Length: 92
View 1: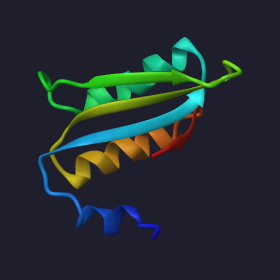
View 2: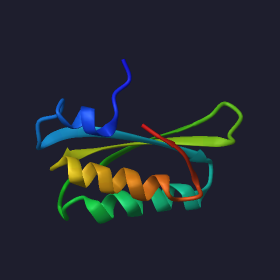
View 3: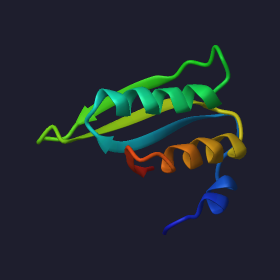
View 4: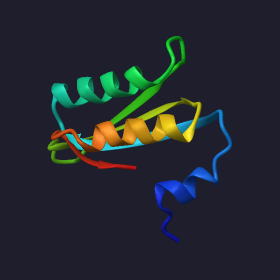
């Protein structure tokens, strides 16, 4: 079953631990941009754990950032900003 962002909102109870995955090209600029966007929207002092994986051909990188999400509005703002960036291929 495929859920839209609005439909998923009813499935989460905030605050909650949230793993956000971003896929893009394997560059230092990509990693720096993803962390800057997420840290901009997450409260100062909130722990963010980053797990980075590189594709077998070293062309792509996936970053999973896990943090305590406070609201659906916060998640929507992060997804919107990431999806508008040229370095981002997919967000999950």
